[in-house]
Length: 180
Image 1: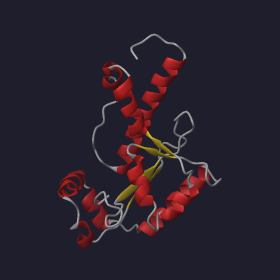
Image 2: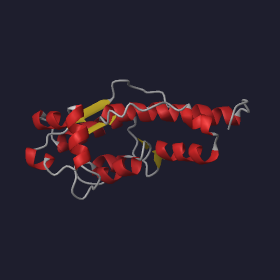
Image 3: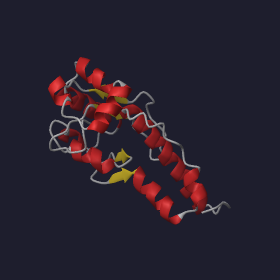
């Protein structure tokens, strides 16, 4: 995103990997698109975005992309419907997913949000529960993020982190000894 304000900022790249309820990817390639942006649009980015997206190559990729937001939204919706055709069934999931949801509420992305379930699966919320209610060792053993800040890398890291917390919860419910 060019920033965190959906009223004025825009999605620069978007990625999606559909998983089973057990967090196994159905398609490891997933969907990934870089959205065309004009130099003027990119000039309004925050200092953090200029630095981070410049270093990752995303800013340059947006300048040379031929994919419009409308085209990406249409293709992403088709990708989701390929695996989950029923409206209201697919969950939007990831870290701090409320921010992504806010951007998906803006046209042309809103068609995707309309197809998804109203509930969110927020991996960051799981992390905060562990931070507050489990031993420090549980959080310390969580997968480390590479902080690439690309859409695909963020999706893959969110899946990996959710899988870790799922195993932790399963261990608790099975009574497996450990530090909780």
